[in-house]
Image 1 (cartoon, rainbow, N blue to C red):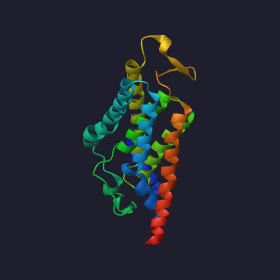
Image 2 (spheres, rainbow, N blue to C red):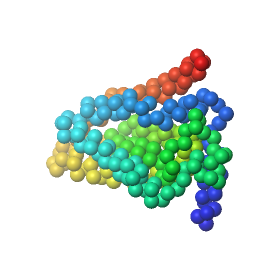
Image 3 (cartoon, rainbow, N blue to C red):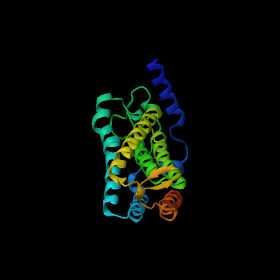
Image 4 (tube, rainbow, N blue to C red):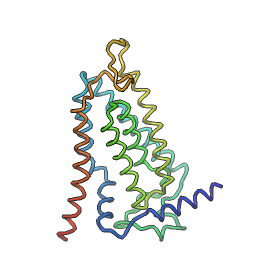
Length: 235
């Protein structure tokens, strides 16, 4: 049964991996790079700083994001990947020659599960539960899924690797959120504010603050696309 699932995973990867479009190749290579998203990260930090009334709140949120990255991506890279030792598609002797790569981008040897998917989804879920603003939640989930999709497109992860990463990231993000309640929610219930009938943090994550990362996400995505088009037209 497991062997059948693995074969399906490989066939699905070959179906979804790569394309004949130089535009998509360049776009995916750029979007998969964490440096591309630095403006988005800074926008999220700005939102947290503006929304929290005390330095303790800011430090707690940033610390919780660090916990997400530690238990999602770092745990994966240091423990799960060496332990499971599943070869990436680009290193798999069975299908490696069929995988379409971009600029010979192959990544490290092992790929289960996707740290990109785990990291981004853990942070996305944690901040979504924390802030509880629909437009920000949609943006964060779109950012995570976009990063996850680039890994399949570039052939460095099987769809199963990405799905497992998303599921692990969801568990980590939710666990860190529950932990954050002990740090951020005051003992005095009178200090709590309600949003969508759920208890939220003692911070003001107003719509105006949340619009900044949403706008930066859109500008980064569109700007990356335009930059790739302009760059390719000049060479």
